Length: 437
Image (cartoon, rainbow, N blue to C red; front, side, top):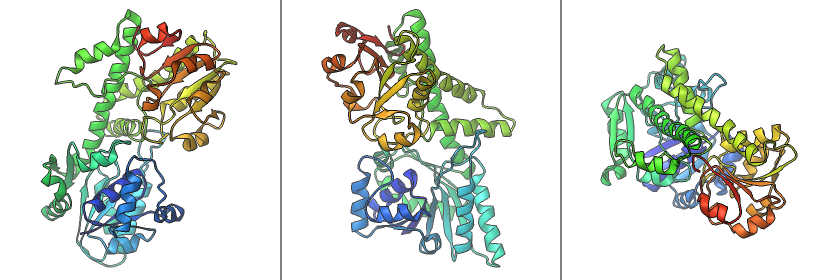
């Protein structure tokens, strides 16, 4: 089977490479000529563990190619995945201009039956809009071509995307007709063979499923952060609390980790988008609205926590920040808590030295005022406090004696609870964490 994936960003590139690994012939299309040229050289625009080897192998074996020619790719393919970016607008709604542009391009190029699949995270009703735009372009050209529109939302976690695609918790497919369902079932046949769970539904429900999943997971994060704040008031331990409720199978242990709140390309955008279209439909999602408020407030609270550890005023103080990406195993800085926290410290007159294993290039563009360092120890040299913002594995086994000697004051603010309070204090640190004594 021949397919094309339009959009060679995070979702599109992972999707294309993984389908190629299944033995499918894939053309990944992007209008950014420089990006396509770089991909042909084997240079990836994103960091994702294992993706470079997967892309290289499938390019060499002739199953994966890159192009800027959307029309040619559409004509050569039976299934067309739309995986372009859908960034948020300031009011929380989703900018669908890229999706709409691609739909029109597909309509102009379509020369026979195709299954057009929205892979990008899009609001409910987008697939209907895609169909209308394709039909409009066909009518303008005086042509009639049968096609199907489907929704197949992605559930890829950055840092674990290949495993999530190859061994998914579930695959959701929303279709309008049996022909499209049969074609997509055939495309995903390798996952049927390993008995991956499939949910077949209508297009609208498939579109909503991604938003519902992310909103629910974001709710768990905001919930445990509120509980962490309460634990600090009563002298409790949020880790024990999370274990006490997480062992209830109805709740589960995942996403009950306190910290500076959720970030990245999905949870912030999707919760805001869900809240926006809920309001637009006259059915406000009050829980989701509260989740967003809690998450925004948590970042401000982390700035306050750092200021308190510095004696109440960051002005003139230097803070060493470890971890800039929104989570480990990615270079993604989109809506990263580190950005708001660092800007909050800078606004109060503080100075920041920072280090991240892979996100330094992206961080430099967002935080030009920050001194970026070669490693954790250079960041700590002469700083008044160390703040851990992202829980990269290499920060879990720091040389604490060396850190204490490098810091001007032995102050550690651990926003991810990487370390245990009592051993840190016994080692001579003034240690602050989240939701623990």
